Amino acid sequence: MTSTDIAESTTTGVHVSGLTKSFKSPQGPVHAVRGIDLRIDVGETVALLGPNGAGKSTTIDMVLGLTKPDAGRIELFGRAPADAIAAGSVGGMLQVGGVIPDLNVRELLDMMASLYPNPLGVTEVVELCRIDDLVGRKTTKLSGGQTQRLRFAIALIANPDLLILDEPTVAMDVEARRQFWTTMRQFATRGKTVIFATHYLEEADEYADRIILMARGSVVADGPATEIKAHVGLRTIRATLPGADVAALATLPGVTNVDTRGEAVILNCSDSDTALRALLPAYPTARDIEVTGAGLEEAFLQLTGDETEEAA
Amino acid sequence: MTTMTGAAYIKYELLRTVRNKRAFIFSLIFPIVLYFLIAAPQRGNKFLDKYGISAPQYFMVGLLGFGTMIAAMSSGARIAAERQAGWNRQLRITPLTPRTYFRAKVLSSYLMAIVSIVLLYASGLSLGVRLHPVDSWFKMTGLILVALVPFAALGIALGHLLTNDSMGPAMGGITSIFAFLGGTWFPVTGGGFYANLCKGLPSYWLTRAGHIGLGSTSDPWGSRGWLTIAVWGVVCVAFARWAYKRDTGRV
Ligand SMILES: Nc1ncnc2c1ncn2[C@@H]1O[C@H](COP(=O)(O)OP(=O)(O)OP(=O)(O)O)[C@@H](O)[C@H]1O
Ligand SMILES: [Mg+2]
Image (tube, rainbow over all chains, first blue to last red; front, side, top):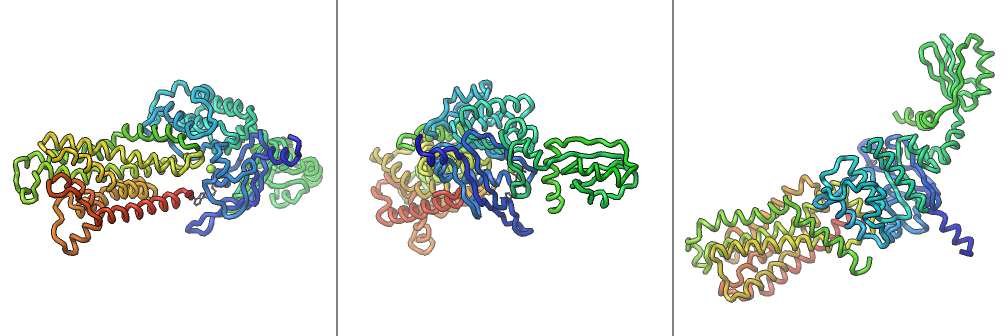
């Protein structure tokens, strides 16, 4: 390709701008997605991470053309979602959904493959997903985890350029999960773009190139896992300090949040060095001081926790 | 998709149709059982002589109307179940076109209807029903298949509008009313308001299709019958398209 324009346009897999969706409810409108912007490159594996109700599934449903946005634009490989889907470029595993009865696993895969212009072979998908033990079984005679694996195989049979998975490992045991991610990785290395939604920080951290953290309908952080940790910057100072004044501690420079556990205080800090320098002169009785780096888990709670409380 | 794609998809939909035990029992076996229960004890009964029909023939015709109606609408029940399982959302993220989707559903309905017809003919023959001339069987079949268009479409429409739970009662109620007013159980006679109401229903003409070969009627429909079926056909197909669009947001 010689033109930079074309090169540029073909490296963007998913482009979302100003995406907004509200649902009506008896308590008034629920703002499920509040104007999000995303650009995901071809070949990237991205985790959509967030707590229950963050808006992950609503976002995914809009990207897949299943839900109509109130506002905003979505492009998949430079095309409208419906066009990309009609071209067979998209494979998806939705959060909820079963399979149809009266067929066995091989037949269902064959049936779905027939809908795509360029599908993977049934044998290849069966091998890739390691479901050879299931091929002869009736689709209604599968366990929850086995059904999930079949649904994953259905998403893969499209041989899609974009694979979208909404909480794919729910109901899978440890071994099935491990196999699942191995398969997903294998498929992603073929230059495929993958987006998966999850609650599990380890999954996002371990299997995604990039994490998009969502909370209450907005993107609160977007970047590599390390960058997300840096974004919150978090370290925690823990000290024994009987009778501490929580409100006063919270005003110390570098401290973002204060918690107590009996006689111990826990200071979440955006800058632990500054906080420590301020803490010691102000509270000379503080002892058993520990400074620890926060894991993604804490970063996650820090970023999403405040807003959840606000909502309550 | 090109013209031939969809063939494999449709093949599997038909395979699923014949494997579905529940539909098989309710849509196919039930009318047959009913037929033998009603018609067999009355084999020698001449009460229908004034219409020139034997009891086995009369009830074969009636149950053809009833049985094929249920069979033709059976796709609807399966659509509702598939929607409940979230399968339609899965289909919507594939390149499956509405055209292929409808074709598969309509063919499933007709497959069920044809099996129902064959079983009822066989049952009728076993109770001594004979039609003259013999090609009446084929004419009758042809008219029945035409008269089923509105019912196949109505089944698909309801499948996209109703929940799986409400589908059973809705189908039962609708088929019973259509069958009752269509003359499946009692002949519709006279020309009053009631009779005209009945003659405005597709089920009346579905039942009338079975009156072929009764000697007197070589064309049991006439223009009124064809017109009624055509209007119902157009309206029900439009209803099905509207229901599908409302359900899926697709055209
Ligand atoms: N069809 C709907 N009608 C009304 N409200 C809805 C609907 N779908 C989602 N919501 C609301 O929108 C918000 C976002 O929901 P969404 O399913 O996108 O969250 P999520 O991040 O996928 O959560 P989870 O991790 O539980 O799957 C929630 O508050 C939810 O209650
Ligand atoms: Mg979700």
